[in-house]
Amino acid sequence: RGSDHQNSYEAEWDMVNTVSFKKKPRSNGDATVNANGESKWSFQFSLTDLKSIKQNKEGMGWSYLVFCLKDDVILPALHFHHGDSKLLIESLERYVVLCDSPQDKRILLVNCQNKSLSLSFENLLDEPTYGLIQKLRKDPYTATMGGFSKVTNYIFDSLRGSDPSTQQRPPSEMADFLSDAIPGLKINQQEEPGFEVITRIALGKRPEVVRREPVSAEEWTKNMDLEGRILNADSIKQMIFKGGLCHALRKEVWKFLLGYFPWHSTREERTNLQKRKIDEYFRMKLQWKSVSDEQEKRNSRLRDYRNLIEKDVNRTDRTNKFYEGQNNPGLILLHDILMTYCMYDFDLGYVQGMSDLLSPILYVMENEVDAFWCFVSYMDQMHENFEEQMQGMKTQLIQLSTLLRLLDSGFCSYLESQDSGYLYFCFRWLLIRFKREFSFQNILRLWEVMWTELPCQNFHLLICCAILESEKQQIMDKHYGFNEILKHINELSMKIDVEDVLCKAEAISMQMMNCKELPQAVCEVLGMKNSAVTIPDSDIGEDENVAPMNHSALTCQNISMPVAAANGTRDNTQQVAVTLSAHRLTPT
Image 1 (cartoon, helix red, strand yellow):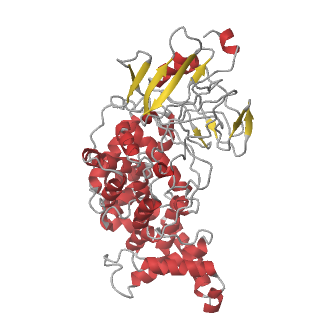
Image 2 (tube, helix red, strand yellow; image 1 turned 180 degrees about the vertical axis):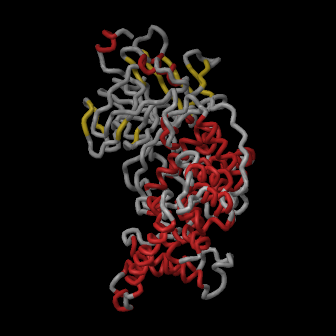
């Protein structure tokens, strides 16, 4: 289109960077826009539900398109009073295969079997009733197509919610799974942040990875000077990442890995630090120890923390000799450390699952004070997982989806088709860092490798990808549905080979690092420098109107696969979608 032609009217439809939700109604011409940022006169559907597109006869007035869905629902025609319908078809062909109908040349048939959707989208609602469980609808990743009209006789409030029975699964199904994963866990139902979904690109050949033997006491000693300083922390971390530690070293080295001991500190400085920390710990311990029964009756939060801790301690790793039997000293220490942590961070207090994180640390340290401060350091990393908003969990699930889609978009599409696109079956993995998925000894190895923070940020998400990649074939070959996927993932507990998973996860990280066109969102998740070809972030905020993007500007970008942005709250990561706005939405 020429520039004069473009400026003569508002664009009827276009690809846009972002569509922001609005907390209160606003005006868009004559069309009212709802609180979620969509026009009251809009309609939307998933591209996976699209059956055919009917075009107007050539030379017969305005061009228009009529979308027919697989359930034979025919949507009102989109009229293009100034053309552009062919450009819309060309854009849709990026995501679905269109072919002419042998019966009617005006009809384009959609065949999604031969070409997977290269972009998927999550439509996040502002309504608080749509929480984590309620959002497991028929297709949580949707392509949003909204038709905005200034003059129409047909007003469509929304296609969403017309049949609640098909929009969401029974909450009990997900509730049962999460209850089994972390008994008693309560999930706060909040909106989730927007995210960028990346289409699959050529990552190149995955390299072979070989792991080494665990770091020995001799190797550790060689990297320490006469005053006890670590000579080359980076080298030690690299060795630990590649092979872990021999058990005899863990009591000392874990304190460095968790940040309790500074890597550059001398032996004397560490001794003085421990003395200060001993005093600090017992002052906090005395606080809850000195609370009388009468006082505790008037302190419901402390009473609730104590009851929850006592309940969890009695069922944490009881098959391990360190914790087995009645009146075990290990159980008493576990209880006391968790109660003292409530004094250290009373706002967070105790949340179920935290005992799982403390247990291996106490087992290795065999010392109440050292275990406490190492646990504090670990909780600094994991804190957001246990906050009421559970923002850490939401962010990680979104980041995991971004990585998994890059690695295997076909598997992602299959999961979405089975209502599992939210990856909530990975919830327990992320919440307590695989604690219940591996044997006790293997979790010691896995954690110390992850604590090196090598080879990239969020390496634990690549471990998730490695596990899912190993299980993908069985899940897809046996056509597992929603319940079967949850059951299968739960039953992997104690059956996963830790060395195999670490090799595969490291290989995936190397494969991504070698990719010259790694998407921006993936670079951000892994904490890597921007690759040669990345997707620019949007500058559009929540309180700004979305300006149409020139179609020619969109297509001239040197990007191997299309990426656009979608409805969602603004965040560091982006969402992806297609939005269309037509001047008129009238029936034919």
